[in-house]
Image (cartoon, rainbow, N blue to C red; front, side, top):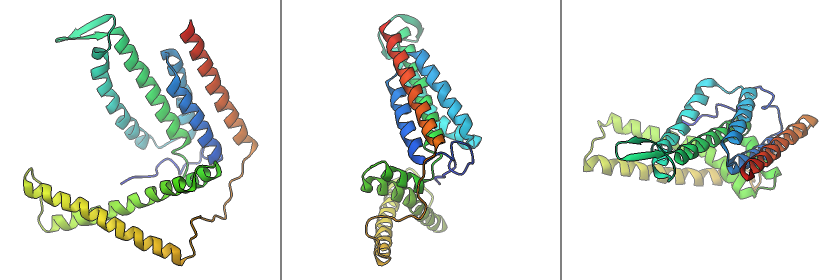
Length: 253
């Protein structure tokens, strides 16, 4: 089951306006993605780690997210050092690892973890309902913002339908095996999840129309910015500009 585990805290970052957090996260992650030198990527990772420390996320959920990301990065370490031309460092059977390949894998590792940590600290700490409102206030198209909110909401509904059907299959004695009957049954299961999800969406949409839904959600809780929000955004933009300029100068020298 998908959990909204990071949005229920009471850290200073949780109290910031979601619009400023989104703007800051966008500037910061774009800056990190464009970095090309390991020292600047390491500095960005340090700043992202500082933001994460301030947001005080639940440690268990944080470690599970980082583990999922770094498992994919391990595959890069298995391929990149042996596929990049350059100065040889060591041999593994018939393959030679190069200094350039190791440097590239290290750079990607630093940048990936810096982006994930910053995203968890600044964006994952926003409740999804507020995230939709913040996106609309930042002039993101309404359909895109609503699509995000509805997708998040109905992932849980689809997961519930899937769990009920899986339970019914187990009661009837179904045990998945590597044979044609199991593959056909699991395909039927996936199809029924989609069919029930479509039926559920039509019922929910008709219910919303009965409640005078006109394509726009109304909220009594408005977003209001403070001086702390502006100061936070200025600091993030200044850090992004400084590290980008240092990276550019380091590259040119």
